[in-house]
Image (cartoon, rainbow, N blue to C red):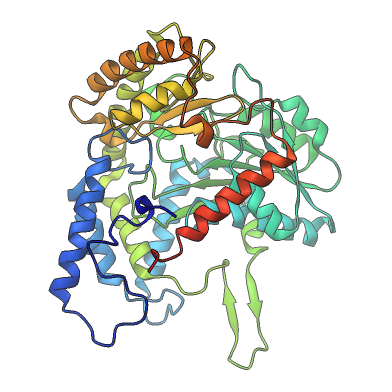
Length: 467
């Protein structure tokens, strides 16, 4: 633990027990407003990768009002809140429309609203496991993903007893090796994965080739659009290069995940998982018909959910419409192109793959985390990659603010100069120890040590400052 873990401990009372007497609403709201204002200032500069995808306080205020009208509602009780069925059904329908469900002729496309990207991914894996058990008699299922596939797939396979197999990616293109993935498929494979785009590099796997492979092998194909799902379709419409078809227009695509709380600009805690056919979604429905408390069913793992999440997500989608999303996408892709050109202007830097809105870059001349160290001093917050070491900027609406691309160009030039000088002096990058890979590759000892550090971090984040 350190003082930076608990920066408010000296300013506000720490509740170590339930207070005997309540505080006034005004006092509580004033305290919350102070915290919010100070923390928002961090990303309002436009120097933070991802995280705050909208960045428009007027839009946030609108969503807060929509959320507040239904925050107290439990959407499990649809007889009391039929509006939830309207919101959920229309959210799913609008998302199906975005991913060309009209092209499906071999099923009835449906979906479900989940608690986020991990929720959508977990429900897809669960559906594949249960559907394969019901229709193919598979009792020892496996799932094949690219190495760049999100760790939420690892988590889902761990939770649901599904063997995870990992296919390598091409180090130049950053796309999955389709032939290597094919070699990992056997009679117990329930599905394979392609990303659109993957989290580390934002690049889009060859979903058309994976679609053909899935059809040839008779397995499902999940397209993970949690990150790119609500911006790449508009990039296609704008004619942005390197965005191939990745949706239901490909006959092998059987599920798609897309986070409405990222480039869908809704509040945190919502995502949509789409299914090519009802039978796949419904295979993971849960029922308990003989419980003493009454008959119970749920479409997914969650039971109670706040109606505010559905209302705010629906409100975001219908307030922006296609024109609104297209306009914001144009701004983001334009800024990404400008920042990409800035990176490419430095011969010491190298872009990973052919990016569109997530710009991952490394260096063959020095540790890229030397650049990261310097940029952090200028207020920038990138996301770190390892094996190989790289850093990325996921371009969002805050980067479209005036002056941000100019600041990026100035600061990056200074950072590259610093990195060259620091490398010449034999300096070690401080942030590389946190975000970079282990020199020489991962070992059991290094894995155990990193897990210990991460455990301490998670313990701290759920604890109180020292008394």
